[in-house]
Image (cartoon, rainbow, N blue to C red; front, top):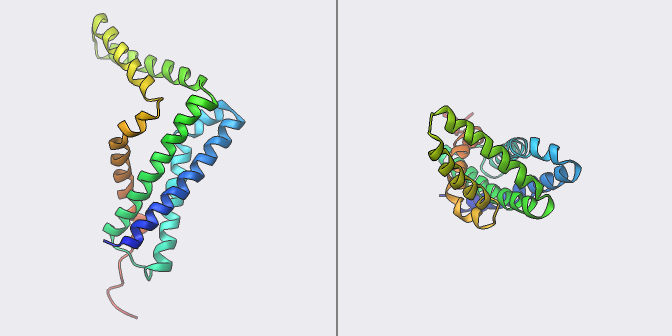
Length: 179
């Protein structure tokens, strides 16, 4: 493995995580609706694209424009894991201190969607009530800082999944024939 590239992945993940956090704080300062509509997909997509661009630039400048898929995958996965954890930290901070009302909105929407799903599967009222109580407790716990550690496995799986996609764009094989 390439330690220099792994350390670069850590640095790029931290930089892009901070950029995403700054964007999230700017969005929430403008409008709650804007934050809620863009922060879930827009910011992660933007930072993924930036990671790919920065990864390609890194490949061209420091690796003679060739990087195998495994090295690109490890680089991207490390960066995405760091970015995801910084993003989670930012979200919990916003939900607890900047605009706590978002917690109630997310809780109500999540509970309503879950209840519709339970009814769609034909669960009886007693089972639905029990599941709703459990779900409410889980959702409330997800707004705590401890949830970042508790859900780090999900962050890792997400980083690995999107790392496979990013690595596809970052990697480039050496030419078969020298010119």
